[in-house]
Length: 86
Image 1 (tube, rainbow, N blue to C red):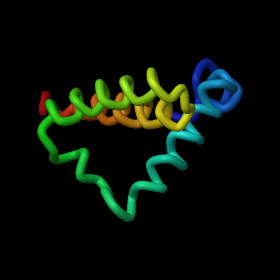
Image 2: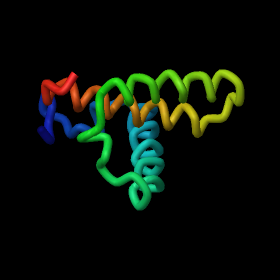
Image 3: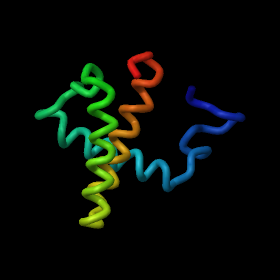
Image 4: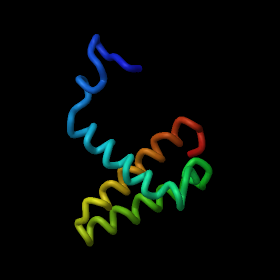
């Protein structure tokens, strides 16, 4: 899917969403050497708990990195929902 309604995705998707996606991808790549794609095979309840953990960390620290961690976990849960693994 590279075009929607005759425009490119980069023209159609909000700049803020592109920015979030790029920062989230960088965060995921930072963790790739350690964690790789283990999220594809772990128990989905682990991911649900991880999301709660990241929310708690952000609530106490206010650090934007924690928001990126939550976004990454949400992406994982979103993708897993298509696999019938939840």
